[in-house]
Image (spheres, rainbow over the protein chains, first blue to last red):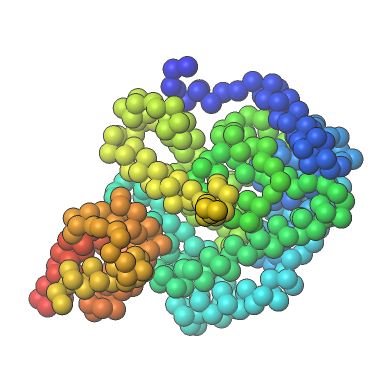
Length: 324
Length: 85
């Protein structure tokens, strides 16, 4: 097929059927379990995964969880409930804040923020983000701390290496806490945990190892984000969820997937990943995306680096060959 | 030690665990050779600021300034000259 913006078009009914068959077969014959547990984030990926699970097993065999913490966007809860209600599946809400507090997550994170902004107090929102001028200049992916004060002003600072690691650890533990709660629920029901990771997230490493990446199966992992949207529309996912800007909802100051990680719109990420996989000439890719060759090279280089740096996310833990 | 040697020693001790197994020239890209990733670059920037007493601004965070021993040494020299003038 000639490379164009339409190259990701799918027969949504056919693909939905294939994925539902896959889910049903794996749950019944591979895992030999009774159903699916899925965490609903209020976003499109979990909504589509849940809808496909219902199509595969019926709504009575799909159990959903909302796992908010005190910094979660209230919209995530609202849309998660909306999704569960639309699908007619059971939905349980478990606030993971006490677990995170027991680890000292918020206190440790606050200590880092106060190193940069000692007078910030306690009533603030924060996030980390990358510079969004990836296409415009050669630059390095160095995270910045952004603090939103109650008066609407934003303070920024470049994080030191140690502080960046502390922030990441206090963020990723949220996903890992959710994973353990999902497995608790799956085990007591004799169900499997269904993942919600799509192809660009998987290949670019926008996933927390043993967090949202800690699941039994990934029905969406071979679908580009654009194709997830096509499925969402076909499956009747509520329009509010489809229209919502994708976000990991990890930080109290709302940040999109693009701001936190990709630095590019999903449409661009999708097509470059497709081009990488299908050896499409770069000149053709640049022309299709409306980019100069210089811009495409920057995006391509950044994405190749992310793919390489996160290769271990997609592999089994390495172990040595032992000669006997 | 001049700045190039100081940088090389830091990279060797910090990223290569003191080993000589990984060879790199002063012109080799840290990224392309896989010696340093973006998280490691944060560590390198902190080292440069502390060791050489210079401030690395956001606009300085570009491969042309940081992505090899020679580029980094040249950047440090330019910063020192700029702060002295």
